[in-house]
Image (cartoon, rainbow, N blue to C red; front, side, top):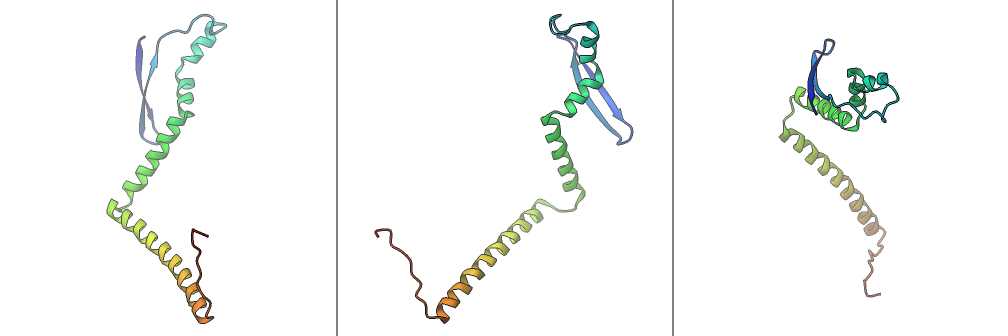
Length: 119
């Protein structure tokens, strides 16, 4: 099977896309006429098929996230510190709710009861 490598230039976004195609012709039972066979291996159809594939979409999302990360001046340490601060904030909110409940029980002189696993 021979492969041809192609390089396409997108003038609007100033990007290059590389891809390879196979020159192996399908069996005669696959297509009813030669025109369909030629269309299946033509550049635009194969490229559009690749653009709609799940792996291409995932790579595109990852690339966009990479561009956002590199364009912002944040470092890995800053991102980790931000997530740590968010975790501290969530835990603080939970502890405030627990402390206010315990404060209410203490003011009302309500016993704080638990249960034993043996019962």
